[in-house]
Image (cartoon, rainbow, N blue to C red; front, top):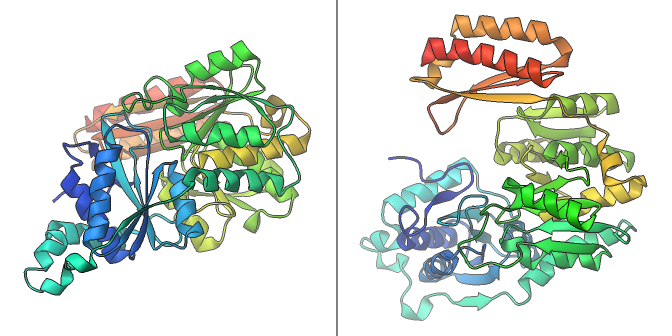
Length: 451
């Protein structure tokens, strides 16, 4: 049987792969494996109400309490789990995926995503048919009618989350007075939170795509489609543009010149700012193997250590928790700052980044100059057997040749896709031309050997 959980929860087309029955079973599992009080939040997808009802029913059927937070960013649920001293959390969202998709991810009592072994237990529980199947052998496993759980609305859920972000900046003695922020909330959950937080911190905010009808989330907008934000920044003369994905666990920014500031730029400035304030644990920032070489050079020049993990925010978080590091993230703008939240938090990342900019006394563009991005070319090669990449001598030879040519002014990353029959060839170099030529040279050998 294929694994139910992917790298970020259970995903699929709502009412097809991700059914009410599945949401019900996951709700049951949350109450069985995490505890009886479960915070449930959702993004703006049309299917959110349906899956929320099913997941809540699952929690209650196991004798638990469904604490319904309504529409709220994913990091808002993680925050509320801690704030309300709940036993766990359920987020109904497919993040940056199209509107017809939805997903369910679970948080433990500390607001952290579940480890593989717990997900494996939950998969077995669901495969066996949940509490109903277990009750065939022992009726006590399924609570009788006078022992089922209840659903309670979380009053002012978004307000608690907004104020948490606002307080984190005010505690540093700065605000955003004089800043003009252009904001694209992608018809998603941050439509209810980010603009209000920035305004309370003194910023002027011009916002687009903050309405929603359930079928427009992430469509031609938000952090995965920055063109509308670039146009808005130019039109209204904003100092910075900020965009979220559907569940606002990530953030991307653009400058007045239209340059994109991804997670590498944010991590670079934040790490240096944290070092200067004496709060960068271990003088280290955690990233993935996809970090731009420009980020690596910026951290080297700043005397800050970079630890790289496999691609995926869960691996970044595992390293941070294991070693006690305070900041980590990915190019996608999925940043984790454990002082403030237990998962990627687009609003908190934006708040902390802008606080660092304000402290620097520079413009957003000037502050971003702590890092220079190296041009990057990524070529995906469709292959018959992606696992044959390891140990292939002709591929290893061309990679070694390119690495010798690039020296310290470039790097090569070649890896099999985790989900598709592809080998991904990525090259960074001092110029676009060199990056493209060398990436395609390697890709040609990969295709010859493995396609």
